[in-house]
Image (cartoon, rainbow, N blue to C red):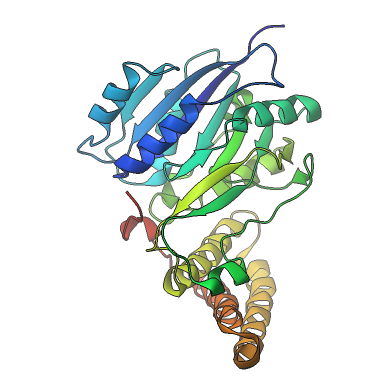
Length: 313
């Protein structure tokens, strides 16, 4: 059997410690299911115009297990950086993986993704991103499971994916007319939109539940304010993405109703929170934030999360 070639793409922006942790994790990858072992390269795209990660990558690359390529994308915005990463993948690469600079993979991460891809003949394989809290965490966060992702049995078909933990057949990037939409450079949601287009183009997306990645959650995120902001921004992005596939009238009718239901659910939980506890209060406010994000999204207003504070180092 021919050895498959995999490019692991990392977008980074002023997170030197996070990037160092991630690169160390990628250096420790093991392969028990994928035979023969894949040929791996790591591509780092630095979205800081000053090229802050250049020296770190040069230092690590000197003794790194995999070929480590560094590129700079001076145009600020996550979509620009993702497109730069895809453009820098070496010709003849079979698969492209994405993982974030505040994450660390389990040693079997890539092995599991490749095994599931082969088992199910998938074009895209997505896996869970689990929280790894830095510092103390309030009990209500753990009880409310605010950072726990939705999970599925391995092989479960999906209609979308995200770039925090994903493996994509290179052919998908070659044949899709548009990659990561640069209109979403400051808002995020460009990956959500891309994979929805991939699904509508007829490609197969499946879940790999054992392909584990851990997101390092700093104390600046482990709080109610960030949880509610994320709920609002996610819903706001969702509306904007959905308008690429449906008319404004259709989206407005369906999502206005959905938003109203979320707000009513939230109000009920807030009312019950005196009996249920603080996690129910925040869960209720989270529902309400999602509803508000949808309604504001219908007006055309965008939440530009990438102009705001960078969490973690």
